[in-house]
Image (cartoon, rainbow, N blue to C red; front, side):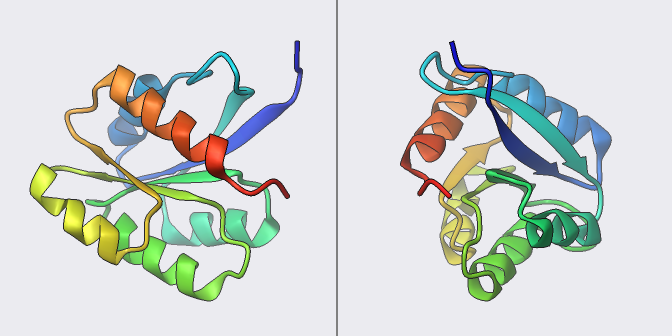
Length: 132
């Protein structure tokens, strides 16, 4: 059994949104993947610091975060960081999926979060990431 972990950053200005995302995805989204260790970020500065340090394997960004939403942060990271970790954006409405595409996110979660769909989406993204 593997003892390694996958590092996932969850960004939202609202702690309850971060908690909902973490609870929906869980500590192990699929049996074939490593356990997840979460880092919570409440500001864009926290996200940029973590990404610059290279500590995260996946980013889950709240598309509704204030004052800067996760979709804008995703687009910025994808355009400015050569080895940007995969990004999943959480949106409030299914109709906002096109904005997540604009943001260059690798996948989208839609609120209210379905734990099975959230874990499956994150697992798919983690399986397809390029190993460091």
